[in-house]
Amino acid sequence: MNSRPLKIGIACFPLIGGSGILATALGSELARRGHEVYFFSYAQPVRLDLPQDNLHFHRVDVAQNPLFPSPDYTLPLAVKMAEVARAQQLDVFHVHYAVPHALAACLASQMLGPSAPRIVTTLHGTDTTLLGQDPDYRMAIEHALVHSDAVTAVSESLRNQTQEIFRLKRPIKVIPNFFTPNKPKRSREEVRRDLGLTDEFLVLHMSSLRSVKRIDLLLKTIAKVKSRERVRLFILAGGPFDPYEPLLDQLGIRDVVIVRQNTAVVDEYLQAADAGLYTSEYESFGLSILETMFYGKPVVAFGVGGIPEVIGDSCPLYPFGDTAAAAAALDGLIESPAQVRELGERSRLRTIEKFSADRILPQYEALYRRVISRKLHRAGLEPATQ
Ligand code: GMT
Image (cartoon, rainbow, N blue to C red; front, side, top):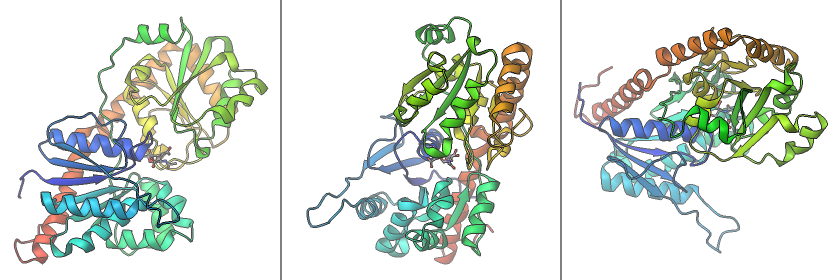
């Protein structure tokens, strides 16, 4: 088996959102393993530390040409991907999210002809579950999926849903997300002091706050906690919290909730927390849940989408919308430090066993090599490995 380092182009969204965070972590891990990685996005991804050996970032300018009625990103992205692929002889485009990244990769590939890199598309959720149902996008997504050399999904649940929506003839490979913690810069005590805490039970929620996250249910759950004076809900918000401000007063929980905006480095807050609370109505995976579990914190969540695959039997799950059950679970944890330790440790062990970089990276590397070998085989240069 050929094990030369690969040249991989990664296109992703740069913002605080699971797909971009995962793509950034993947690129960094690949670079650490000796591969050469080229990121494409309209801004530097929030968790991408540069400079780093083997890591390159190519900013794509959104075209604001007065000839066009609206700005265009897909074409400049495709052109930049094609230019860099040609100059650097990339082996693979690994694109995260079908729209616009997989479509830009298809276009770049057509521009380059037979020497084009192979295309690996990773689906993260809403590109299938929402856009896949949108008649304005559906055919384009289908085209990108059919013309990718491999398609992966981050959970069985998302794979099944994608197959249901698109009825593709091709296989979709499940490669779950992974997480690599960064050493926190401040101690647990320092962070808690900074948040104005003494011995309160700190419940962490990290998300984009998009409507699918059901922040209304998050706040209602906290409002139902019996030991309210002993609990604080800490929200690391990747989107505006203003729409939920009135609910804080309606539920009488203004004193209980702390909100911090757009924090890229989450490790020190994960370390400072006692448990995680996630009330989404859908998650294809739930990267924040995985991050919480990695830090040995129990998670209270509803059993929707891919969440049961992430949590497994490390913590109990609750039916969607059952805020009373979620609040009772938090009360149980507040009352029992032993239970917090036990569930937290089970969560931590599960993440190491199933979702560490060492478990997941070889799966992507093997996939890249497989699609590359198929290309060489087609060109008559080397026998295919499968
Ligand atoms: O859900 C978000 O806020 C962002 C979104 C994205 O695409 O960036 O997250 C999706 O991808 C993550 C990484 O694979 C998954 O952990 C999230 O569950 C998924 N979100 C949804 O399915 C709603």
